[in-house]
Length: 180
Image 1 (cartoon, rainbow, N blue to C red):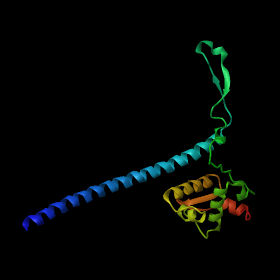
Image 2: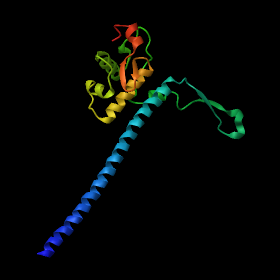
Image 3: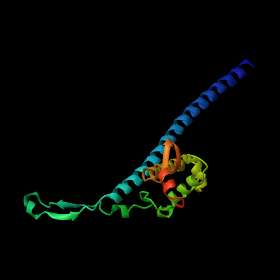
Image 4: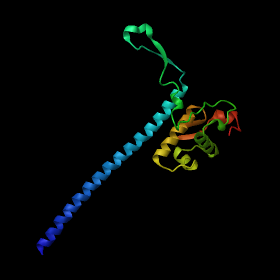
């Protein structure tokens, strides 16, 4: 009988080591997943920012020299980046708020955000806005919405007096009661 219990204890020890190894792998995998999600959010924000910068850049002309010995034969060529904002898919530009401007000047996603913030009784966080604009309450959607809300702050549509808490811009609310 003694050898049976010893065999069971040995198997239990092996099973315990395997469980501990798998738990360690699960923690490492969860960390890698979170890092990948953060990278995805950063890439989305970078793409939107680049598209905005390109949209605001004036057309430029670049001189191309086909042969260094024949510099006199330089030809002006329109830069490959001119007009690139027209080729970026899924990026919306947000106009700067001006007195008398209504939310219908905004792209639909941004308009929805401003309307939700305007209807709120007080300051709101991005995670409160996400479900109200019809998105699932996932980290990526919350970060994307927060990015849009910060863009709306930069453009004068919203205020962020306390980090992470957004309200309708005071000057917009005072300047135009029917801005929606």
